[in-house]
Length: 133
Image (cartoon, rainbow, N blue to C red; front, side, top):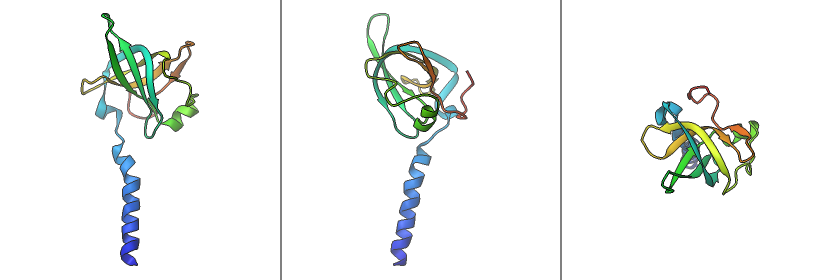
């Protein structure tokens, strides 16, 4: 009985600790000196903790498509900022302003998203260490 209780407690702690260990700071992943503005079409949006992800297809001068992945804030904080799950739809033409990743991949930390109608929404996490806009 005691062994089962200890195993249950240990398993519960591991389940709780997993998402915490997966979380990271802005400074660990993104460069505050490398701002970026991306214009493109929403390919997919993932609403999940600890952050949402927006996948954006952009085109270069030659017309080649490049897929970007842009990290936003936590779903709960974005909802409090005016977001809804359907504010971005696949195919929407948007502009995302943010900061490039340090590893050189097509990844950014989104600070704001300008929607098709021109409305801009703050998309970052408050207190994540990113520079203020």
